[in-house]
Image 1 (cartoon, rainbow, N blue to C red):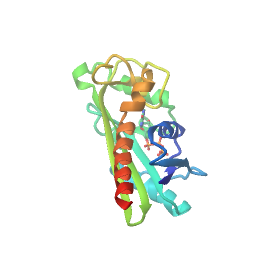
Image 2: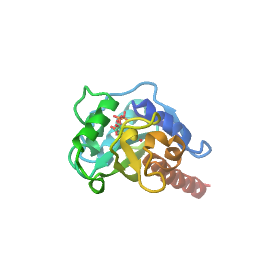
Image 3: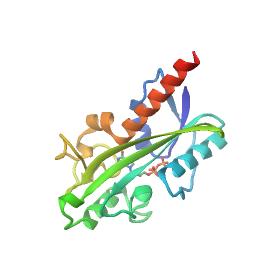
Image 4: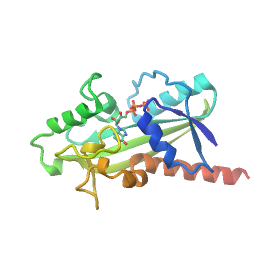
Length: 198
Ligand code: ITT
């Protein structure tokens, strides 16, 4: 199955290129980025809005991603607003540094956070599906690492890699991220669907 990718974020597009088995799902870049006002109250609403906007314009199946970082100590500041945290004029690095600044003095146990990715596969107005992935961890004390994008340099996943930021773990991120988990759910779903239709 072929889906048009509804994103203006080149980093997401790069990650998706590696995340699907092309024998099951092929994702093609949209010819042009559309301006979509993301005023939904949930990741699902925003993912649907993006998918529908691209579907309405290009009249073909679309996949959209709405994602963000949810930080326990700042419940209303990031989440669905992650791309705009601190205002529109900040760079991704400035946003991540602002997050470290706001958490200055907050103890390790209260720095808990998770990344979330909600994918919307939009086949038609009557048929669309959501898949969600999460990655648990914490906001560290330091900005570290050169890979990835957004908040990766300040996010430290829980478990064996807890001393490395996500921006230091490109291979691990490709297999274990919120986006990789959501893609795996989607791939399994569409694989099953193709098998059933044969
Ligand atoms: P599109 O809406 O065009 O897809 P966007 O960047 O505006 O692009 P979102 O509205 O989904 O995307 O915002 C998600 C923000 O959350 C993104 O800009 C990053 O700051 C952050 N984010 C999401 N996934 C991330 C990841 O894997 N690593 C680091 N930061 C991430």
